[in-house]
Image 1 (tube, one colour):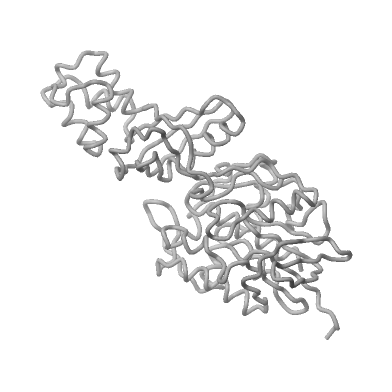
Image 2 (spheres, rainbow, N blue to C red; image 1 turned 120 degrees about the vertical axis):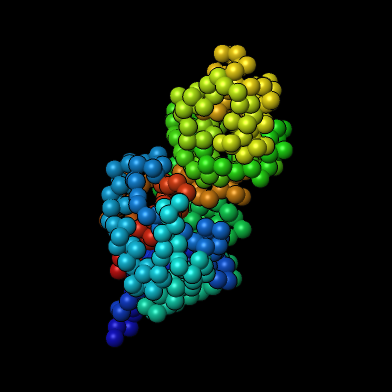
Length: 407
């Protein structure tokens, strides 16, 4: 055996870091996984309401958001097809997955995020990766021919190759502090402006607080001066504003526009699956009361609020509706202008938007084009996807590439 085994250091034991360690580890090299918390994988544990939506059942790459080259992003995603990822989790990790039909997400049969986190940790350890917990990395410097890592307690580690998987800025209570982004910027990498993505939107004053807890499936369109996105899914009124997958998936349009100092993005909601012509037919002159018809299709509190907003008496019969009132009601039901003033920020953001430019990493290995022996993966890269397992896909794919590339 050689006197010195090549050392691969993986900084961060989240989804991407664990996957990187699993694929970096093996005979002939020493893999050290440095994690600032006691256990790692905390975002895995809180994902999917503690159930962990491991993967989507299908993937549309054009639903990802990046300020980098979309082609680079697609090439990275293609490197590990979705069906092969599922095989890895089911066959190599032994986690049986089941499809949740209504959302298109794949969850562990046991409905436990801890099962996923623990299986990833065990796989990394069983392949020989060392685990340094409570290792708060404070410095990373190139020391040819490799790298020197400094830890807050005074320890140092010299590594031949380093994989940075420190995440972004979202959900700071899980350990995300932006260390990797700051370090990579200092090392000369381009870091596109970061911002909270997949985050609830707020309204001040909270004019819809009385509807807090009301939820329903909707289609929502967000439009800014530079972008337009549409999303369908769950919508939730909160005490401070709006949440749910449909809102989270378009929130970046509002946030990016605000950061760019553009005019506020506009949000428009279609409250049901019915389009204008369908509602016009439902609201055609007849003996039913307006409130009865609208409440049949919407939660009662929301139906009452919409009628109140346009000044319609819910007891009025459809045959008594003036033409303009009917048009106003159809508009409120199919393209309701949703006011917003701010967002919940990184505290409740599912992911970090922006990050290291994809053009500065090799798409086949995730190795930095600026520094040899430095590999990047996960949330600190400039790409994120919608709710529903897309961001785990990004973590799994880039983590695997970085792990294999570091060998």
